[in-house]
Image (cartoon, rainbow, N blue to C red; front, side, top):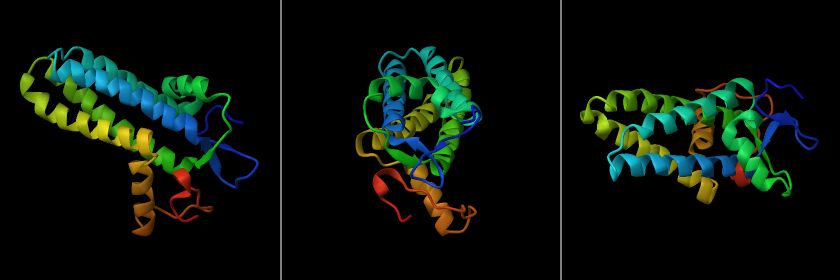
Length: 177
């Protein structure tokens, strides 16, 4: 196993996989952090908290994408919660695509939240992106629907993304393999 790898080969799969339970747990932790940031912005009007929380999420995505998801803080914590549960494999290639989208979304929120500190007119834009992020994290945490993964498969169908050598499974085996 390589330290710099998104996913690992498992005995039953011909493609790299991740643990679905740990990834959903990670999404739940990120959802909690996003809700804390939103409460600080919407209710308390404490905008200073938003860049710190979103900056942590950017760092979390970067560590997962550049090094290995096992070392990203939210996946590490989630693995502590699910360590006694059986490994449930999920294809890593579409998760990498989804995490790349998450990195882009959280980076946009981070940059705009820095502008928000000096100019409250940025609140609407930050608010819309934060609510989008919360919705996506909620769908993955509560229902196992990874919108980024579904976008990956839509890109495959439309031939916008090159077809992988082996087509991985998606959450709950909800797509064709």
